[in-house]
Each structure stands twice: as structure tokens, then as C-alpha cells.
Image (tube, rainbow, N blue to C red; front, top):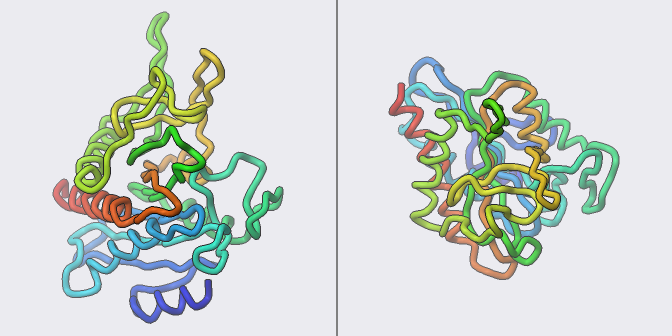
Length: 271
């Protein structure tokens, strides 16, 4: 972890800082800050493409080009499974409370890096938190492409109950998917609308967090970052790229990078 952080610090210089044990890259806009986006690049296993996508976005702003009004904070966090140097952060699903990952093994104690991450999420009222993650096809064969997981609520109307996603969230999710699908196929594999026991399909590429048991489906957010955002009333969307441990990850890396850059352009366009 330390050599990796030294490399990032050397490359990004004045944009680089640290929050506890976490490397932080900050892109300040050219004019007054009107919006603030937090981007996290979490990992699972030894595939570093999610963190790489965060760094690729940051590299777009190393010269004179900067957003006009949007501040962007980027944190290329990595988990305990091996890349690079066993940082100890987060799995693709977040954590199923009260179990965490520490040194590559389940633990009941929250690792310091996780506390650092949550304090960043909670320290200010971001306009949007985006979490770029991955899922291994070997472990999750029903996840066959790229998808986003937005915040969702359950709404009752008379005798009917349905899932509701805010219009603004739908716009952002659509922007993410339009950019990502230029490089990676969107998630489509499912059994009657259910993807494994953790998601239900809203539409191609948009999955909702759920607990699925028999014919019962209950909205259930397991992702620890998403839970912190819900607690802080902050918009949060998780970006998930399915990939194989032994395959080339250039396509999902490009998909994440394109999606994250597209959201910055969307916020700038809507100034």
C-alpha cells in the first residue's frame, strides 16, 4: 500500500492528500464550488481496474482543463484480497453486518481503513457519491455484464406496492449506462427478474438491492457506503462491472472511466 500511495502522490502532487490511511485526490473547479461529487474505486480480488478507472478520471484534470463549478474528490480504495499491498477496505457488495474483511479474513471489528472511508462519506453533504466496483464471474455467474445499483424506496398506493427511484437518479443512471455500454455489455442475465439472491432487475443494466427469499422480495441495502449515504441523505449509485479473474479487464476499466467522466459532464452541463 505504501509504495502505491507514494506513486500516486508523486504523480498527482498538489492534488494529493491523505485521510487516515486513504489516498485522496481532489479536483477543485475553476470557479466557485456549486456541487461536490465523491468517487470511490473499490476492489475485490487482485484486479485493480476499478481503482485504475478512478486514477484515469483524475488524470483528465492534471493540466489546465478543470470543471467549471464541480468539485470532485476521488479515492481509489482497495480491499484486503491482494492489490496492491493488502489495503483492507471493501468487498464488491460492501459488508454484511457485522462481518468485515481484515487481513483477508472475516472479522467482527471494523478495520481502521473502513472507519476512514465512512468518515469521508459522512463528513459533508455531497451532491453525489459514486462507487466503482467489480464482481467476479467465477463467484457470481449470474452477473454477466455492467450494471448500476441506485438508491430505491418502496411506495404504497392503495393495495399496490412498487419500487420507486427518484427522477434525478434515473437521469444519472441513464447517463452512466449510456457511456459504459460503449465499452462493456449491460447486465441482462436473470431468472424472472431476479439476479441471484441480492438483486432484482428494474431494466437492462439497472439492478435494485434486495433480499430474495422464495417469492418474497425485500429492499435490502448491504453496501456499507450506500448505507452511510442513506443515513446522510446523500445521493449514491454503485457501478458494478462483472469480470473474470483471468481475463483482460481493459473493457470494464474503460466502461468505469467513461461512466464517471460522463457524470461530471452531466453536472457541468446542468449548471
